[in-house]
Length: 227
Image (cartoon, rainbow, N blue to C red; front, side):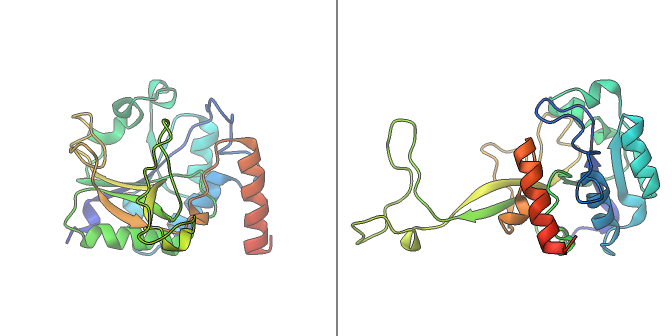
């Protein structure tokens, strides 16, 4: 059992994005993606206020964090424009925690209860890292046309009802020890990566990288919450 006081909860946000510029502060259903995730995290009573951080460089991002009264980690310009693990997560040896749970702010359909369940699962787990996934029940082939999926026994036609489920990376919720980031690892220091898997709803894992995804997610969000 891990102590909640040892866990850093962090949202990393920046204006620079090679695929969709300023998506964090772009109007989304009368709010923004960043406002949404911070509001959800603040509503989860399990998260200690002093453990919740926003990692931000640009003033526009910091202003939203200040509006929500969350702690700000003032990341460097280099961190806000980098892609490598240790530079992006430069807070790994600067904030006084043993573990980190990072939440992807580009997933507006995720529910607070899902985040809370992930936290509870990680706290009670013997694993030092955790990663969100969703179930897929379909057929897959490699680039050479060889089937990767185990063909269901006694089946002669495609029928996904009989396919053994596999799990796809959701890229929404991540848990890790902080000290392994210094060594160049994240979530687990073993390869292949075998963290504790947290199965979530696929729709909640809808991740925005492009304009069409932003528009689609906004429409779904409005329907779900009658905005």
